[in-house]
Image (tube, rainbow, N blue to C red):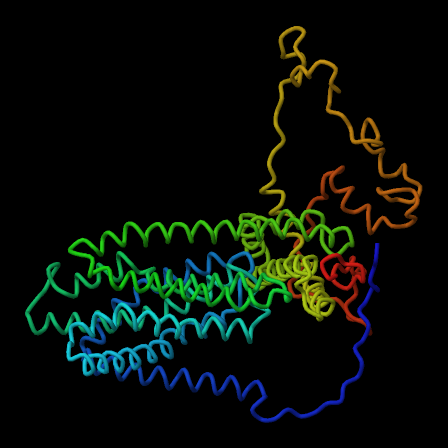
Length: 516
């Protein structure tokens, strides 16, 4: 088995060159914030001009109602490996400001041009709603997903990330659009004297806020799924990486056009499209995302045991980190015994461990970048610094969520002649056939091995490598230690943090089958 050195070698010294002023991080962030702020001010002025001050305030108050629920739903989907809040804030601001401004300006210009060219204002409005609006709006929203995919590639690792980023962007866009529609409806009621349930405002609120708050997120999520699948593709499939996001965008435009054109299908066209397309699509996408999240938890349980063997993690941690219920119990336990700072440290520990599992899975499949070893060391460093706070909480959570062993009746309580565990098949081993070459009654006690290893006698002195994980399955885990003080950092040596050596590196091995 190929191994890597205990600590990564130092990179060669680089000549420090001062980047140009436009390449500095604060310049780019400042330009982005300025762009979004100006877009927000312009869109605010346009919406207020169309709806009036009272209509704007009414629309704002009603349109904000579904936003916390949608954000919480997308954040819940991203609980396995939560992305940074700055990405979500950027996506929401882009959808509410930049994408909404592009859509209002482009849709208005295209509709007026069609009305002038065809001399048919009604037909121009229908064509603009069913053809132009889906293309413009979905393209404007997809720009935010593309920016995160290109410039925050480390935070964009799969389908769930694509769904969350696209959904939050569309939530911001729908928020601004609902202000405009509800404000115009309120203005119409002011002119016609409508009020109560029969008013235009109530009807618009029921259709856009109650029945279809997920409409825009559903459309743009299709684009996000395309980007998510592209993120899972290897570098060798460049054509597929380019075509999948485009296919998702075209599908989002098609479903959006079908939704906008449902009114042209007759009196009950809206309800037909809602029941036959929107609700099944929403259910299918929800099932897909939840299934993907369960697969991510399976990845955590499958990839972290190698770090248990190497001594970086405790034996119970892969099980606890692979269960959302155990994670929640660990955070609650840390908060109850050591305060909010400890709970935050446990949450960060869970996030770093999940990122480590995903990184190793990408390395095994040949999708990790050249900085695999550096990124792995950074994550292990972060885990090692927080181990004193997180391990007692995760150990408690693993014990609290472990399944109890089945209780069987004692032999003297069974009928005469009955087998205490059920009669085995004729000729079968009474307790199940042991593996070929295995000890017929299980491995002897740990102390019987002369070198303290559970693997073989030939691996002298490798108890930290092979004995830790195996012995955890023979003996019960020790009782949790008293809760330590949070934020205890391990001393750093000249080559990195003090800790066990790194495990086998699947990506840097010269004979890796996926890199051939």
